[in-house]
Structures are given as C-alpha cells and as structure tokens.
Figure 1 (cartoon, rainbow, N blue to C red):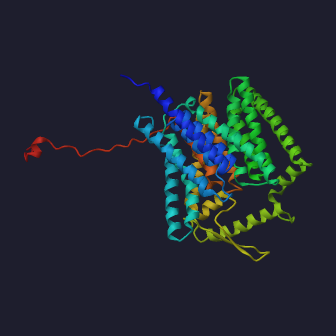
Figure 2: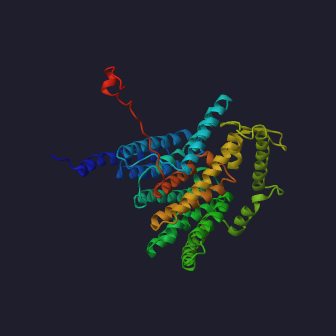
Figure 3: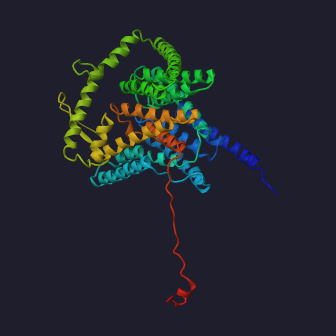
Length: 477
C-alpha cells in the first residue's frame, strides 16, 4: 500500500491556509494593517513550499526588512523574525539529513567565522564591562544574522531553484515601495524607520542584473519597471546615504556587466535601454508623488538635500544633523584612542556633550558603520569586516562570469548590493540593524552556494576495536 504524498500535503495545506489567514487578519485588525499583509505574504511563501530552505530563508530576509527600529515595538517585530529564523533551521536540518547541505569552506567562510568569533569576544567584553544588555542584544542580533551566510552557502542548489526566493524579495520590495508612499500620506513629513530601509536599493541593483540578462523583451521591461519603482522609493526617502549608494553601485554594476571586452558595445546598449526605461518610471513616479503631496519645487528640494551633505554653516535642520554627526565622530575617536586594537566591547554608549545647549546625551549608535565597528570591536573587528566585504564582492564577480544567465545575475547582484551597502554604511549604522544585514547575508550565501564552494568534511570516528588477540591478552611477538 502506498501513500500519495501530494494528497497528504494538500490535506494539511488547507487547515494551514485557514490558520494563516486567521492570524494575518488578526494582526491586520488588532496590530497594524501592514503587519497583517506581511504575515500573509510570508505565510503564503511557507505554505506553498513547506520545509523548503530557500523559500524559508527568503521569507526570513523579507520579515527582517520590516522590523521597525524606531516605532517602539522592536521586541514584537524581532520576536516574529526569531520565530521565522527558528523555522528556517528545520528545513536546513532536513536538507542536511538528505545530503543537500554540507558545511561550506573556503576563504570567505573562514573570514566570516573569524568575524563572528571576534564578535562573540566583543560581546563577552561588553557584558563584563557592564554595558546595557538590551543594546548588546540588538547589536548582536544584527551581526549574528551573518551566520545565515554560512547556512545558505552550504545548500546544494542551482540558480533555477532560487526563483521562489526571487519572488519573495520582489514582493517585499514592492511592499516597501508602497510603505514609502504611504509614509507621506500618514506623516506628511520625511520619516525614517521602517518606512524607508535599504532593501529596495539592494533589490534595485538585483533588478538591474536580471534586466540586462533577460532573454525576452517582456521580462526586461518587467525588471526595468521594478528597478524604476525601487528608485522612486529611494529618491523620495530623501536619504543622502541611499542616493550615494545607488550613484556608486548602479554604475559599478553596469560596468561589471558590460565592461570593455569584446561585445561591450552591445552590452552597453542593453544597459542603456534598461536604464532609460527605469529613468522614465523614476521620473513619472516621483513627479506623481510630488504633485499628490504638494511639493511645488521638487528639483530644489532634491538639490538642497543633496547639496547639504557636507554643509555645516547654515542654521537649518539639515545642517544640524551634520553637526550632530561631527560631535559623534569626535566622541568616538576619543574613546578609540583608549582601545584602538580591540575596542570597548558591544553595547558601549557614547556620552556626547552639546557645545551649544550644554546637554550631555547618551547613544549606542554612530552614523558611520566603520567607525561604530572600530569603536566596539577595535581594529581587529574592522579589518575582519572589510576583508569579508572584499571576499563577498570577489565571490560575486566570480559567479557573474557563469554561462548561466540566472546564476550570473544572482552573483553580480550580490556583489552590487554589497557595494551599495558599503557606501550606505559610510553615513548610517545599518550594520547594527537586521533590516538590511539579513538580506545582504543571504545574498552572499546564495551567491556562494551557486558557485559550488569548497566544503569542510566533518568526521566523527568511534574508537577502533582492538584485535581479538589483544582483547584476550595475546600480543604479537
């Protein structure tokens, strides 16, 4: 007698859909509408492909991107991410039991493990120094998400098997685009937090990679549309860090694809066609948003915001933020001089004295990721992280040379997204938040997995049995 596994799956899928629908509606009605929508999208991905590690990991990245770091409900949001992360361990364990997952090795994984080990040391130092356990937990939750690079890269997968993950990321990006537009409708002013995160910027780079390698005109237009919508989100965020990241990452990614080798002219034409369509979507979307929200002088708004990146003379709220960052940097360097090599440990809080109002404030973040890492993990942690970024970009560029267009797009997208975040981190502290760090880690893992990395062989040997003669007390002469 045989059991129809498909029928069995369908039998359990119906009640799962009902439960997921009820939970999503409850969250939407009693918590927040967007929270219900996110729950519905994630549960759909998990129900349609139950215990599938790729879909589960993509759902984890999507869930992490919606964590609101400024809304006062981080415990609630991170608890959801933790539940999804725990769920991810189940399909990964099943994949290991089936021989589909093996411990990855190689230079990048060795660098990653070294960085995570040093993070654990810095965490212990922070606890022993008496730093805030809450701050330590939040910082370690973000840095610890890099462990999913190790888990994802151990999967034996092809680029085609990553398609469900691509669908989840596209849906998450569109959700963030909608949130960005809703932000102005609700708040009527520029905001940060969950309304504007780096995920659409990373997906924009990924969309460019898939657009230029798409084989059909319809697919190329679809990816170009997604690229344009993500750029609309990043533009109306009025975040100079996101703007600078895209201004570096998109041209870098285009050059990495087209280059100057044989056939470069045809590749550049394809890049130009994609960029042209995306630019039209960007212009139309931004203008429509500006008209709807009553922005009468959009070019002046954009120019003023971008031009104020390094201004400190004018007495405006924009330049005031630059002054605040200079005070952060000064306070950070004073402490770095005390422990330049090993840092002060995770959870350290800065004490910053305002020279104008003579008020001392405390904060655990620094609007510069590399300075923040140097302050808390010292030069050791900073060098390890920079080495990890270099290894991630090299891995992506290696995979981008594949003859498989999907694998090449994934790998180049991972490299381009790393470049984007490397620039964004010059002006923000997203490495201390799970929103972007989780997705970046999974992109690294997916890119590494498709390039067939080296694997470590873990062997446990039982004690060998002694010959029968030895057990009897008889020894050879």
